[in-house]
Image (cartoon, rainbow, N blue to C red; front, top):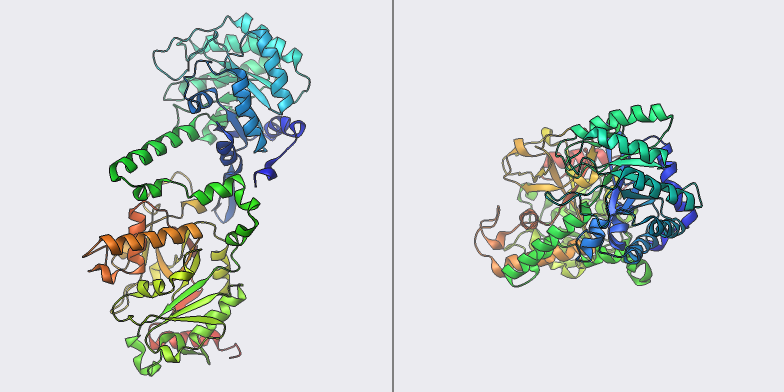
Length: 580
């Protein structure tokens, strides 16, 4: 809920200086309205490196004049009034908690700048960065734009007056050097830095539109020498927009203290809006544009609407999510063992396989279990379960059995194949996943090969063949690129376990894609020779091809799939110590 981000101005204002004292590079993301502010404030990725947890997030927010102006439909030439900028700043402050750095353009004349300082400081802003250009400035990144620099002494006097008017020591005025933007030398920038530091600037930002970081690295080295000469400690800020191949570690090593990603949220939103709009014009409907759009429910959740709607809270919990177990098919390979019963009722250490599955689900507070029967339906017994019969099980696939329980799918569901036994912690781990579609996969694929009559559902991760400059695996990168039985095993990274979780949004997209395939396709689709033979993995692959994101949850062993008599023997050994 956005109210949880509420923080008092006096508490927020000093956060930037506190973070700088920790000595790490401060990572800053732009925000141009309340929603982008929430995203930048709350966004976090988690992963592992050499078995150790790794978390990354943005440390502070940047209210950019470029993105503020552009979001209002105006050019970045200081045409948007300070009151309008302050309204945007207030919107961001109201729904975030991290320190906010404001792009102050040229700061206006010294009198205007004094009033701006007072209002920004009172609002809880941590810093303002002003550039040493003559009002009205032109954006620094456009080639050919006229860049007129202010006389250093005049700009230094503006800084001096701003420092004199501020009330607290928490607020920072940072001078932005435009020498390199205007085609001047590093020495000119250093001369200006000296003037501004002596006038009381709390830090320096060096700007460049070069695609290589050489000139800012050169400045950083000489800037450190300047600080030593002046016996000062003042942070150095960069904006790696054009020289975007440089890493944060390289910037920190070069001596930078703050890196601002100054316009990326707006730029990415612009591209997505253009793509979505064109897609709707092409298809004359919005269905094909859905993969490019966040679900409305995600927006509701981000801005706190679901917290306000008490009745929707249950949708956000895992406790009562339905479980669907498709158990309609006949298992020819175990025909002699089953004696006319479905595989779900196969005896494993004195208890039917289905009963063991239900007990495992109940242990994880999953009580709403629906079993789809077909072959040997009269033999299926499971206390506390709902039974739905798929009378046409011979004509379709497991996917048809899933949709026989259609009313259990719409608000989100868990899918569990009827021949899977697994350890309890795997279910618990799956229920903790927050993505819309999550497939449970096993990474011990190297120990398994397709055998005659038994085909593995192979999974290929999107990142499996990508060169990497780091050895960190982030959870959000666990995207499925391909899934199916006919994938070359050398290209597979995992095996699908027959366990999946769909949120309400994921379930809606799953259902919509299935309906579209059945209504509009005929003939072969993915690995299915005919649309009537479409499998669960085929449908998932179709969703991936339509650019829906399908995530996977990785496990290492801890489960067994029952296909052959030897599987029954192994499963029985695993459970022999339990009471039937």
